[in-house]
Image (tube, rainbow, N blue to C red; front, side, top):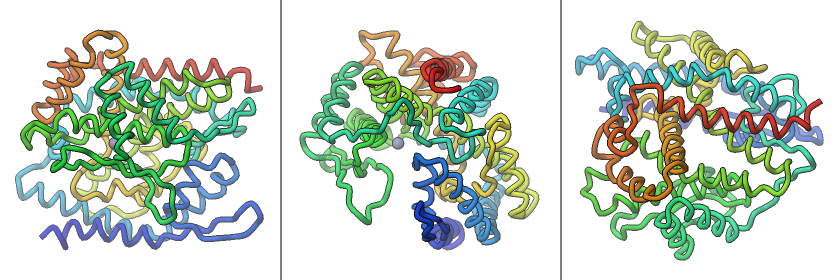
Length: 444
Ligand SMILES: [Zn+2]
């Protein structure tokens, strides 16, 4: 019944999103129409403030124009889910999402409490980034905007150089991870051609028949693309380490799936910052590294807060688009410490993740995976020696036990207590302080 009754709504969202048109005025005054995907590319990556600042209200308005049909879609997806829970005598809408991530409610609330307790550390970061961009306020559309100071222009990195850089830096933490990466490069497992008509994003696919993996993405020579290769190679390494296990022990959940990938990405992001040849480049790369904690502590948190409050109200009946806007705005204000100049109230409509049918609450597993990999990274730096063997043992157990048991067994930490999470937050704080210190000479 789900094909037409539940998944149907998820597909319906894709149909709506495919028809979104965002008017956009070029630098030469010419107005064109962008698709939602094209507009989002500009909003997240355009270096010029004017491009992002003009596009943001148009993007918000384009989704606003469709709010009634998108709102119906969201209400019916959640309605089907809640009805299904009720028929199974489940009255807690977080029960299933937590089961899928094999984690307890206590762990989830401890993690969010630590995020809440540390959220104000981002205020000086947001202020500084706004100043470096030459703006009065840090806005929603500035979260991933690149910073160019001290005459820095991003230089293109050849694919072969990126490959060498990744292998060299993986090798410092795990020779086996480096060997897998080298194998992937040597045997052309990674399809990176930059050609028209190709979908954005990166994706790793397992080939169980060959016990190999393939990566599909587009390489354009930016540090971000190199980070994506590292990220996907992290997934490939995870698969390589569990491929000989029985099927059910390979079926790990989303929260731990993003651990190996984020860990690999962290190695390369840190190495990038340290290899920078100018202060301008270092600031740019450190800020690029900050986009992860900004997403995990604030953006993803806003999604979680919104979704929790939406599900509470949806249990009582349909929730109007006006109310969805209110809930989203309140969630963003709370998560971003009330510190943005511009918010995105129709984010509930523009974000695909709210419309994924097979995974409810497609948000907190990201924050979990990020902070979990930060904890592993901190341990890797502290332990040295036998880190590799212990890391591999952890990966091989990811589909085998609860995340609490996994963390206890392999990291000797208690996820229901704030200590582990606070250590991760402290690493972020260190990056913020370094960013402020480095960029001091570039603000008036
Ligand atoms: Zn991933």
